Image (cartoon, rainbow, N blue to C red; front, side, top):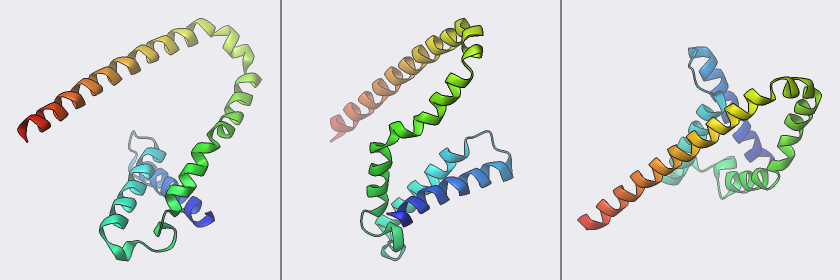
Length: 128
């Protein structure tokens, strides 16, 4: 489990280094997640890659553990908000506006994505 968690964090670090080295406008952890996805896909295709933390379900087990304890990762963010409560009070209306706009935008993108995926699946099943 330690090796699998280390692999996940190493992919995140590699993504962060890659993004900073090339000055890309992307979050490093997202690039690291794509790197981890490529590693997992390679593990499933090529037997030689399935070694160490990639063998068996090590990464999957470690990721399930992280998701099960995800709420603990929000504690530092909550403490930071409480420490800066004066800023929240001062800019509360702006925070609510940004929150409302982002929720509506997320819902719209989700609906559009769902409709597009539904149409592609319906078109694919009609072709068969």
